[in-house]
Image (cartoon, rainbow, N blue to C red; front, side, top):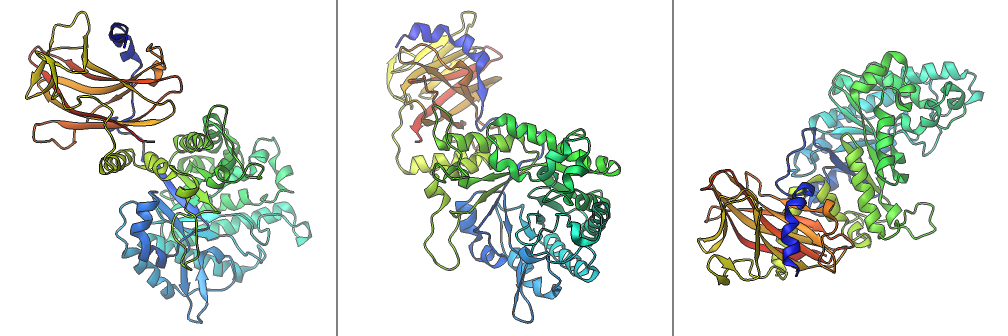
Length: 548
């Protein structure tokens, strides 16, 4: 190894270090959430029986579920078929509340009742039908309130085209829009009377009509659009909402987006006061819309598992795999969303069906997807799970002499080089049988480890501090010629302040790094920066494991 070149470059490297590990600063914005929805949609009864294994195998922040109760006539009442004139009995849903209250959720804290605007085979002017629909909406709100959940609106027309203006109705488009706004307010008022602070996650809001929102006269497009009456209905929802009611523009078209710029642009379209989302809201409701609506995205897993040639297919970019594209796009959606991303799947499942039929899990179809979800919703938990898995499998440690048991001289350790900035005045030494750096503001121990490009590696070590000093593990990269490469992808890993102290007073720092394509060596730096001459940082139990 060209150690001299390696050491002299360290000072320059520090300017490029980024932190993605356990010691990263917490995000000051509200925690983002990832919600599951699919053909495997559970009922409250299923959740009651299986929530522990669901949370283990599908580490989301919550699920969208079907609220189903058995009516006194023996027929099931489902929130997925709410839009019908049939009435419900609130008492029938007490069992659903009991189901959810019996679940000691650790992860699933944001659960939503799916309300389909289906079958909706009745007219906007049908007072009796709308009274029944609103009464059922209130029952859903009651269950959500009692179980600290939310509501999910799916406006898609699976049967009758509720939101398409019918020229043969005997009403003009403007007259029908007025009725749609009235019904939206009626529906929302029934919900808000039960649960004023409800969060309503809409799989789409005005995003379905952004094309109209970008024109000077949107009504000319809406008049013939499949969802041309939806903006008026949404206006009604806003009319009747309480100040604490929250809406989520779920942007189902996130299914088709590719790349961070598309997701970010769509998020701005939803929330900007001059964007197409706000343009379709009446002027008197725009301030309310902006204050109470956040942007989110739908993400369609089948796009990444369907065969090439399918209508719903997302292939890799040059030099990457399909899973690389999945990772990049799901991360982009998560980063661009203000709070919620809902992950949708059809052909595979996250949990077993109730009927006992054979099934294929999403993890089988897309190996690594469970860890990916975990990394996004709970980075620290994901790292801990990876660490436990690697250690339980006795994965080989690629660091040589990571416990510093073998010495090569006084205060020197086999297989470890050292470096300090030319202006530093500290020292390398042995403290309690492990490597230490004293009184140095810019110094490190170094070891280069052969790695495979494109693979992931788990980096860990224990760091102790005595006095005003900080310590960290840094991963840098060298190419086959052992020259520095991919300097913008350096990773510095620190121990968290609340990490558990071992018997020697050291805390563990750990993280996962991805090897750039051009890299062939992971250069591990055990770094210290002391503010005074007596401060000491110690290092022990240093490990690097190959993850995949």
